[in-house]
Length: 364
Image (cartoon, rainbow, N blue to C red; front, side, top):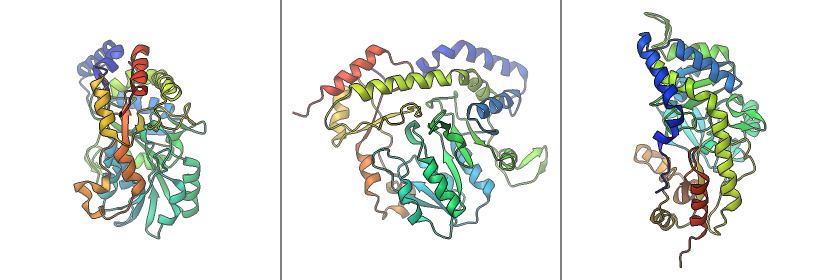
């Protein structure tokens, strides 16, 4: 069986360094908002070509804290892509804001800039592009719309560590970007972890308060904040793995190139390869009109797959009030998407096997 993802294998090359770094933290006696967090914040800000990085507990908190820092009035609207993970929407609704759903581009499956303007009202305060699957959104077009209407651009970059748009790091093409370092991500911790990246010094300073009960000085609280701090152990793990991220992203591109060049199954829609050097290929998401039969075939031949994601958010029980929405492109995507294995420990032999088995699929 070729697993979709084996985190033990992913972390094995870094295991000795991770264990040494964790041991150092344990022996230090300082476990929250210490030197490891400071080092990581500086290193990741530099990696993203941004001025500031604020470590937080997870990716959802990163999004929510950005929205909280902007203090939009209750009921304000935030433009979101209809095709995304639920965390994007949760960050909006948790704060009493209103998500406004926009269909994706059918090819990229990302937020379609040409559909945004018709959704903007007097209540609209922000646009939330989501760099899904490791591919950056059309940030130039989105930025022009935001500038025209005076909107903030708050980017969900949870799957896009190192992604670029037209040669620039996607993380800086907006007012702030939220990252997750969940263990499955291109840059993954050994538990939950997240960060906000921004070049807005005032926003970063407020975020440092908000993540720590609204306080920078102990027992002095300037805001009504929350407890969302990147801990020293997870920061130490990320400090070990960050220097390898560019090389690991390049390995992902190499695998994606082979898939794009060698898979030729007629009914299988492959992701676009026009930005292959800028994408970081967190996932390799294909589409098949008869998904279940195709998945069963792959599993029968020892290839494990995944679905990102099987049910659109407006059809989830948590968001029943939006079930009436007509989002046909999103709904079709969620019926058809399949993620093939793509990770840094796949061997060339395994990649060849996956390609050959996919190409031999027949429904006859």
